[in-house]
Image (cartoon, rainbow, N blue to C red):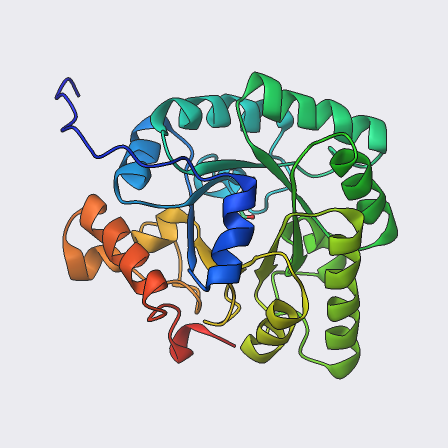
Length: 275
Ligand code: KIV
C-alpha cells in the first residue's frame, strides 16, 4: 500500500480530439472500466486510453442485478476516486438511469460528473429523440458526449433482458440511422454493445466519430470491457464477448497489458467473442 510508484515516461493526456485522430489514423482505442484509484493507476500504467466509470458499478461493485439502481452520487464518488489514480487516459463517466430524462436533469448530472468528479466526457444510452435532444443540449454547452447504442442496459425492462441487438434487418437499419443521428446531435464517440460484428463494421465505416465496441466485433475503432470480466471475477457464467486475461498472464497488471496489446493488434475480440 505504501510502495512508491516507479517513474514512468511522461505521455500526453488523451483528449476528445485525440480519439477522433486515433480513428483517422487507424490506431485502436483501448478502453476499460474502473471504479477506484488503485485500479485506475494500474490501467494508466498499462497505457489504457479511455477509462469509463460505468453504471455497471451497480452490478459489479454493489451486487445489483441491473444497472438501474446506480445513482449520480455513486458515479460521482467512484469517478472522483478514479480521477486521482489517472494521469494520461481520458476519463469518461456514465449518466445513470433517468439522470438525463429531461435536458435540465442532463445538464445538472453532467455538471456534477465534469465539475465535481473530474470526468472529461459523459456517456448516455439510446438513440431515441429525447436522448438525441439531451446529446445536442449538452454538446451545445461544451459537454463532450459519448453515445451508446445496441444493448443499452438501462433499457433492460423494455428489452426483457440483456440480449444481442440488431440481428434483424429493420433493427440494423434503425441502428445505422441512430448512429448518424447521434453524430448530427454532437456526440464525439459511440459505444456499440452486443451487436453483430458486420453491423458494427458498417456503422464504424459510416460515421466520422470513433466507435468503441463491447461484444461488437474487431472492426470497431476501439474496444471496452468491464474490468472485472477481464479478470474473470464477475460471478456467474462467462459472457461470450468477455475473456479472462488473468488466467493466461498471472497478474492484474499483466492481464491489463495483454488486453491492451491484443486490442492494438486487433487480436481481441476474436471471432469466438463476437456475434
Ligand atoms: O456501464 C458500463 O460499464 C458500460 C460499458 C459496458 C460500456 O456502459
